[in-house]
Length: 155
Image (cartoon, rainbow, N blue to C red; front, side):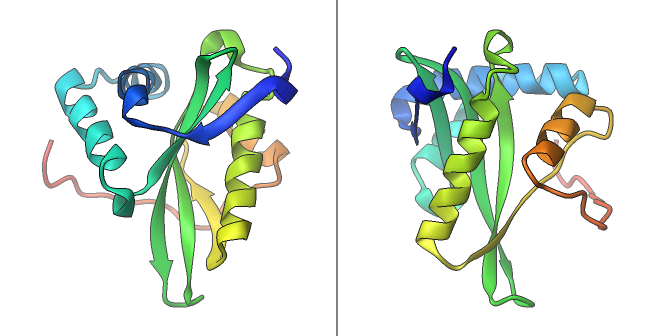
């Protein structure tokens, strides 16, 4: 696959099933988790229909969606600007190691610069996902000094 013939675009409601399938596959691959399909579809639908929650970008090759990522925002009072969080990053296995994620990342970075008011891009990754960590480093991201903690209030 040649990345110069990839199309990067904002996802639409027509992409809901593909995005939900990608999210389920990512959870299985990276965390060995099985997600509830109805919940995932409702979550993707909610974001697609409410731009204040964020947006998805998809990468298409010959009308086939081969990769995607979701962008959500975090306000930083320290910087008086917004961080864009990259989440739900997924590339089809058959399209990996072919520049799909790089194309998505370059697009989101350019979009953030064009929009303005975005001070940085962030993401989190499973510690054991060595391939993803190497990809992020290769694109110029650095490992942050923060540890992440959570307390789940719902399942």
